[in-house]
Image 1 (cartoon, rainbow, N blue to C red):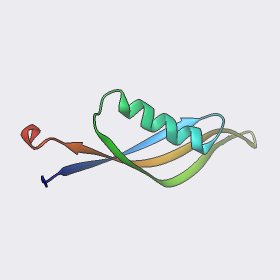
Image 2: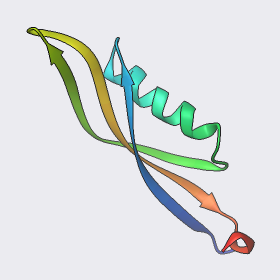
Image 3: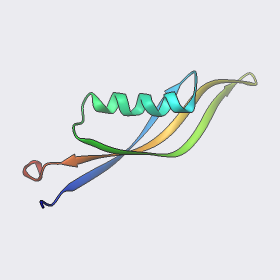
Length: 72
């Protein structure tokens, strides 16, 4: 069994439809530049409100990805 190293980054995804879509947007965007994504953990949810109406959903996501040891 080989040893593994993981990095965790915090991202904030947004959506005008739902928290679930906001979290998915954060992961999808990260996946364009990070490889070996492993776990996404939603830590906080909030909404942007304008004139008494919800206009955006935001999800704070901790996302881990595997780092190759030769990258260190």
